[in-house]
Image (cartoon, rainbow, N blue to C red; front, top):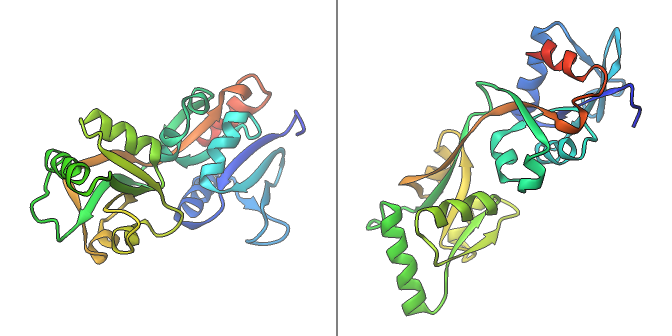
Length: 228
């Protein structure tokens, strides 16, 4: 990539994209695209050294770590889910009051006797003893989920990678419980799931981040300050 260009990663879809673009608008930095809304690249008039790249929110984290983008917007949950060697290459400049959501452990409503992680630990032990298999947890956040459960003394479980709607996993035989991101809890409730009383794994929000590999690149610090 051109060493004189400051590459900025913005989430490519959803509310995270729209709220991020509003940050630029409030600073009177209107983003334009030559090919309309589906364009994967954008620019800011009168700032030819700034290049906007629309990426999946997870990809923003990966590309920041590699130094392929210099400044990026993504969720705190996705940063924390990434490997340590990825996280150490990224600096959080600011946390915003949008993109708010919690990563939680949720169980079927029918499990009326399970209210806390201590109850869940007992269920996991019962699965191991009676069913001769581990309690399965479907999630898109295996690292955070594993760390959380181990830290709470729950060790008898198996993580199942979720590729689609995690909420349906307990009802399709894919898993017994789930770990998922939720903003209001409405989707969990609609799918007959509830959060354990002490099942909050992580609070998340949108963040402005900088690649540590780009700290000495011309224009990066100044533009990050402009956004702040």
